[in-house]
Image (tube, rainbow, N blue to C red; front, side, top):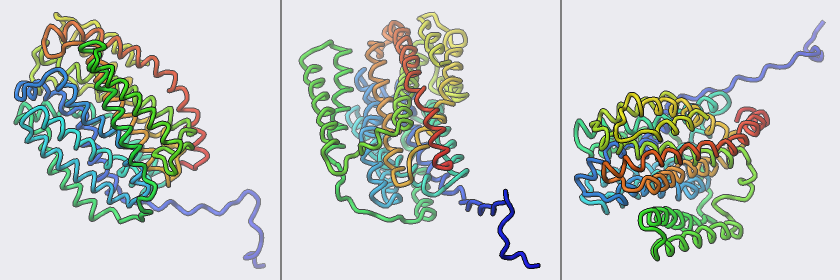
Length: 453
């Protein structure tokens, strides 16, 4: 008897076709570019004493060497994410990569503090285009388990890049010169550019109609004014200058919020703010990154100017953070006890170990949780929002901890302010427990509802 038309037996289902596997070449290229971006948040930290001696940096210049990069990167990331959704992702990525690579070359040739800060700003602008476009390429290239794996690796590279930056910065500065920390990006950038042209196909472009450029400029201007206010108020108190910049910051950021409600195509559509996992994860990302980058910034100076470590030794001491960047708050309290008679092994290393163990896994969880409820068509915008938290958090962390620490250009100033700064880090990390509780529950639900996407 023929059974070709018989109904399928109860409980039996046709097996789903296996997911089409894509080669990891594209992920490798995007990770190489993103590693440079994350690395450049911290790569200059160990080189700062050498840069300061060569270019005669002030306390303000020390801070802005780091802050200029992360502020432009973070402030323009939403624009970069929007562009990645509207325009061919590959084109946006290549544009950002070209700007980043050229600005790295200019940073290496900088002859004074102003030139360095300006070139670092251009690096940040390139990173703002590169990062969301890269993650968007990853999101649209891979699916299912491959996408989950890719996002986990992406988050790991993000956390490792910050720690690796201080190691590479120390090695390059000791072996060559501080300018090498910027020049090294040039051959890597060129190699990624060639590989991307060959491996990543062109996408579709919807055009630039409705792009909220005024909103992006208001956001960047407001953030720059905010960090300038924190720096000025911490150094000189509430002078006329700090009041003016504070008022400007409040005006621009308020105008940005109001504009976003009225424009037809805002940088962040209102529906995005209802994705609780994304908003919560971005908030945690900002706080954690601010704590880690600010801690590395101050500790790089402390290790070299107070404990007398060379750049390469300071970089090796920081490498232990990569062991795994609730435990981190305890680490910050340990670090807050370091004084002028401190030693690395007894007073600094234990705090680094705990900081690494607490923060590293968190970056991976944040990256996966943030993207779990986001559909493909909004992947560029979502990645831009998440990384905005990363970069803006870094800038605010450096600004706030520099303000708390006080004079960071002298040994005595670092000794006096180091402990207070890490008490502030501990408080911040404990406060972050509140938004952290909102991420896992929503992320799990989103993952189930979107079949792993």
